[in-house]
Image (tube, rainbow, N blue to C red):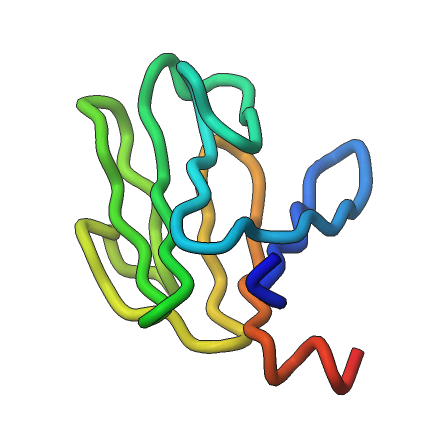
Length: 97
C-alpha cells in the first residue's frame, strides 16, 4: 500500500479506502474501487508523484471546483464526481489520522 487513501462521502455515509501502490482506478469497468453511475469512465490516481487523470467520455469529475483532466494531487484535495465527494489523503496525512 502506498499510504495514500480516499474518503468517499456519499448519501450512504463516509468510507475510507486505501490506495494501491502505483495506480488506483476508481469508477466503472475493471476499476479497483467501483463507483456507480459513471458507466465505463475511470478516475486514475497515481501515488508517485501524486496525480489524478480522468479517462472517459461522460461528465468529468471536478477537482477543487475545476474540471479535472490531469492534475497533481495534494492532501485535502476534494474531487466531486457522480454525486460522491472524494477527499484525497497522502501518506503524510496517514501519520496524523
